[in-house]
Image (tube, one colour):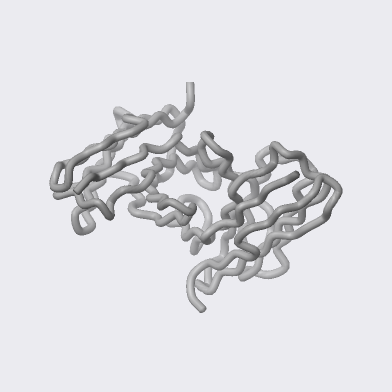
Length: 113
Length: 107
């Protein structure tokens, strides 16, 4: 499998559930990103990992918890979410950080009931 | 005012027309990206620019660093070019996105 993959593609969860989003890149890249895209709003950068260390956290609520166990995998753990967290969550990777071209996964469409 | 402004927000064109989408930014950048997002959400990176002009097939991207402005041009537009085009200003690991331009090309 090539490129950037995300699972699941669709997720419906209640506010008390705990779930995780998974991203995997097969490009040998060293940086990975989580983005949120809400309806009618621009993309928002949530987290950046470079060489498995978090280098950017744009004031994201603690109910979103990222994990990067190795350079190929990135998780976003979700707990006690709110309906306004419903959005498309996109993962991306790049060779390095600092402006390199990013390659995006297909996204996970999350609905919080 | 957003740090990255795109215009127009929506654009409808006839097949074959020349398309221009504009992006102005107010932040410092290390690179300016143009992305294409198709219905369903998938995003493809079209260009990464730090100066001058790049061309890929029917797509051309230009940037003027002094004026903090970039344009994306599509020559001989085709219905398959219909998508949302997003401009993004990258300052190291800090990416700021425009709201996108929804392009519809009619046959």
